[in-house]
Image: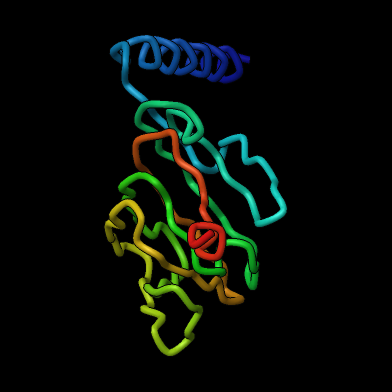
Length: 151
């Protein structure tokens, strides 16, 4: 019986410590546990916002898990803002130019980082292993297909 009471007291103490720790996080700190993040599904995969909103003015940061073989983002396109990319897991394949050319793809494994200036035409390919990429920039942003940009 004493063991049970001791265990319960320890568990309650640890719970209180976790709550106090969470309350000690300074205002403005942003934390994300990707395993517990609210991933939203889309036709091209899944994403979760870390902060901001790429469709609105201001800085944004999000994680994306494009569907392997997905075709929307692999068509050459641009963005109106400078972007940064960090590959969290898997391999991200990116190429630059107005036409998709598999021979121009650059393989960026987990831990890789690159920047993409505003208006630079590029294309991506997501292979079967899948990938998680963190993307940041300053909105408003959007995907502009190269064909639409030429009109």
